[in-house]
Amino acid sequence: MEKKKNKIKLLAIQMESVIADTENNIRKVKHLLENSLTKHRADFVFLPEVWTCGWECPVFDECAEDITKSHSVSMLKNISRKFNTNIIGGSFIQKKSDGTLANTCPVINRSGELVGTYEKNHLYSYYGCNEGAYVKAGKNGVLVELDGVKIGVSICYDIRFPEIYRAYRKAGADILVNMAAWGASKKIPWDSMTTSRAVENQCYFVALTQTGTLKNGTKNLGHSMIIDYNGNILSEINTVEGAVFAEVDLNEMYDFRGKCTILEDIKENYEVIKI
Image (cartoon, rainbow, N blue to C red):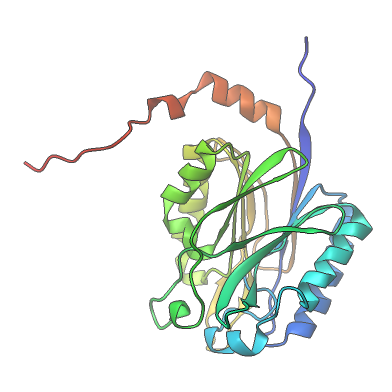
């Protein structure tokens, strides 16, 4: 019997945040989402890291939101209901009940319900940045299942840690996503690592980052992509604001995994002998 095709439509929004202007950024993302979803009726929508406030750690506290009262999350809920789509909402700075901050991704289903969150596990604190001084690191990965599709969520600096993606793949991930505010000076690592995570885990990969100039004159990279399980770029965008879109067939990926069973070759441990 011929397999039923399991095709899904993926849409990722690339944008430039206005530093510390949450309401302006909400209006901008709402406009980009409505325009893109009118053109592409996507099943899953992805947004970049800290799109609500931009990548500027000292403004995190003033831009932080209680998730139960968040204007940004409320807007995403309305969009999901209006366009009948699932949203993996990039990240905003969440002020938690204990007063700590977290770089948090909200996950919203087609009914506009907040079904889960992921808190960035690895905090970038190099080359003049000190994210760890402003937000608290999450403790675990989050594999969210929407419409029967399993998505492993990660944010920016997480991409440098292949262990979390392997854990997602072992847990049954179909799609991996990294939502970032990635510096333009690090294009080779971005292109290399996102493609590698797709290939080594035989997953579709949504590699999404912000574009635009930061306060200190440095730039975000842009170059958001949707990559298939073989490392082919299905859709990409350069430095402009806009969207990447692709329709993918999960059954093609499952067939490939059945022919190339790399997970069966993983050893329980990799002992290193020094000689």
